[in-house]
Image (cartoon, rainbow, N blue to C red; front, top):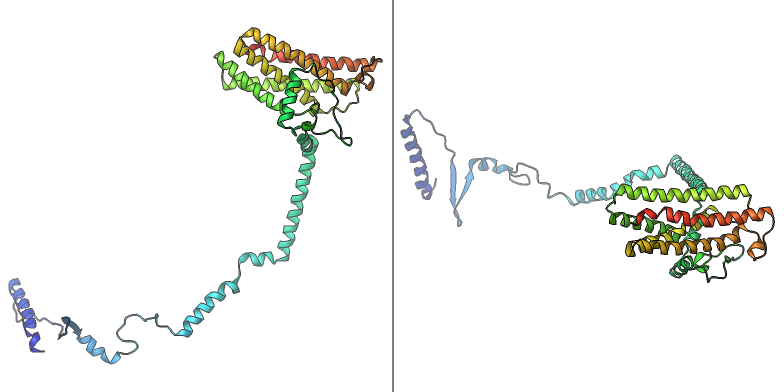
Length: 342
């Protein structure tokens, strides 16, 4: 042991003896094994070098005194092999769906499923078109702003209108936006919704509004409309009238009366009950004239449509039926609105 390290070693021995003496243990019976440490003075201080390092000095080399194997210094061939295997792994393994898609049985099942889906779609479209003709409904909603304005004016003031015939193009009626005489479903549907809203407003002014009562008002109006259309269809069947009127046409003509009902209720809410009666009377007369001039071209014979005298029992029945349909409109208008104005 060097002389420069002696004070430190003596200090350690003295501290041990002092500690044993304080504990009351005899020094002779106590054996303390100190690990011999070599302290070598360097420029930065002391560096500890245990004897185990000296014993294993012969093992210095590639392994040294490391507890674990250093894998960071792998050979270039090992790293290249690992990366090549990592890149080739997904390509060699592939994805699971590839084997399924390449299976002939799976392709056959997919083709069979697609054929079943197409057949089901065709069946649904065929049955839906039988009960609810979607293609025909598009015709009744082919309107624009100009048509709506002209049609509303015709419903309120039909007395000056002369030509009531529907225009045709290659045996097909033109769209409503090109002919004001063509029936549509836009005005009846919007008028029905507006009538329900105005009815709710009228009930609110009477302190009677409730969601249930508003639903009853809307459902009752819809039921009366359906009953009216069914009654007309039954009458046409009993009279055996050959006409091009369809159920949608009758629904459109029967729905035009909601325009006059809205005018009557709004006038009553703004100006009182006398204004309701006056406006409703005007609208009832207008819808009566409108229905007569429109339906006579559909129900009466060509001679009656040209203004000549109607003769024959069948033509008289058609004339009575036309007038009955027109006269039923004011009755429904008053029945569905009289309780909304007080």
